[in-house]
Structures are given as structure tokens and as C-alpha cells.
Amino acid sequence: MLTRPVKSAWQHVRYLPLWSALVYSRGRAFERRSRALGKVVGWTMRWFPPARRRFDRELLRIFPDMARDARMTLCRDMGRNMGQTLFEIYHGAEFATRLSRFSVSGPGLDALDAARAAGKGAIIVSGHFGQWEAVRAVLRARGMETGAVYRPQTNRHYQRRLLAGIEAGGRPIVATGFGGTKEMVAHLRVGGVIAILLDEKYAEGQRLPFLGLDALTSVSAAQLALKYDLPMVPAYGTRSADGASFTVEFEGPIAHSDPTTMTRAFNDSLSARILQRPDQWYWMLRRWQGA
Image 1 (tube, rainbow, N blue to C red):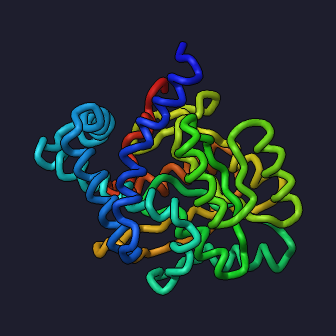
Image 2 (tube, helix red, strand yellow):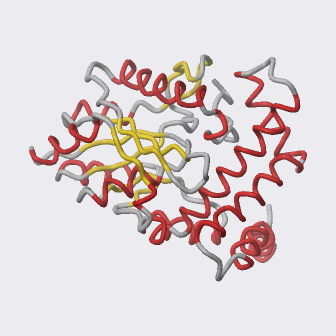
């Protein structure tokens, strides 16, 4: 086990590359800074063997016949998107001012407006696809400040920057775990809106198909939607080819039935998006591990 000084030093070392990239880009326009970090992460994903091997392992589960050159390109493109997404989250307040770059549509918006008019809350479900924080930025601009569930980081430097950026997009921000669940329920019961990313492995979850393979999946969002009679709306912020604009789409609410059926419907929704734009999804989640 690492001693506290050694652990602290190691956290500094791991944070140094990102800190250096952020400092180097200071003083430049927002888009140039975003693209710069995207290029750094894209280059790292393509040429850093441990990262590329992990990417290949997950990607080949779904696309077993994809040629190596195509995988290398996709790995770089995914890294670029994730680098830009990370930058935009870290600068959440500034990102939220760029709504002129967003194209917004979808029947889910009417469902959310109806829920608000009835004094009800709502659950937004999405994944690590495109720029998921664009969804909360749109809702906040429409007068529906939306909280979020997040997984705390073990590195205190990442944790500080990440939490500050997410909080800039709307509150409350609740950590995964029992305490966070209580806070989330209290928020929903008074008419609040919460966003949940449902594409991470959940050890206590159900084995449900995701991109055609069973994956351990939390059904808690659907359980809450049923218990409190709330709309469960899939929503996505897809990054456009220019890298700086987004198509934000709110799908129609998932029909209330039972938690398993509703969660499978969301998995199908996200899977369809990923198959259309595999470069937009974060393939490093170890989504099928242990399933």
C-alpha cells in the first residue's frame, strides 16, 4: 500500500500532463483550446500502447472484423472527442454560454415541459457519448436546471476540476452511492430534474444487451421513474464535424412498463447512436467486464 506522501506525489504526476496542456492553451480562444486538448488526447490514444490495447479489446468485441488501420483512426477520433469533451466540462461555465452552437430538437422537450407544468420532476438518461453536458446546458437555458450523478475521482486534482465543471452546468451534483441516491430522490420528489449516465458497468446490475452483448446495467433510473411517475427521457449531444457545434436531441420518453424493459429500451437507444457514430462513444469504460 502506498504511503500518503507517495500517493500524493503520484497524483501530481498523473495530473501533470493534463495540467500542462490546460496551462499551455491559456489565452487562446475557447475553440482553439478545446481542439488543442482534443489533438493531444487523440494522439495519446493512438500512439500510447496501453491505451490503444484497451481500446482495441473493447472495440473488437463489437466490430471483430474491423481492420487495424480503421481501428487506429477510430481510436484517434474517439480520443479527440473525449479530449474536447473533457476540456468543455472543465470549463463548464464558459461552455454553457455557447448555446448558439447548439441545434436542439426532439419530442422529449415537450414531455419535459409538460412534467414541469404539472409540478413533476424528470429523469434524463444518456451515456458517455458526444458531449453529454450539452444536454444539461440546453435544459438550464430553458429554465430547467438539471442536476447530475457523478462518480468521484480518486485523484484529488481531477476531482476538484471535474466537480467544479459539472457544478457549473447545474445542481445538485450527487455522488454515486447510498447518500447520493437519497439526495437525488429528495430532488426528484420536489419537481427537480436529474441526468444519469447509464452506460457504466454496475456490479449489482442486471445483465442486459448493450451493443449486442450482455452488460451489467443499473435499472435504478427506471425504478425511480416508475415509483414517482416521472418521464424518463433519453437525450444526446452529438458533436458535429466542425468539432465545436452540437446536435442536441431529446427522444420521446421511454414508455412506463417495468425496470428491465425500460432499461433495455434505453440500451437499444444508445446502441443505435453508437453504431451510427462509434467515434463519439468512450470505448474505455470496460463495459462488458464481469458480465
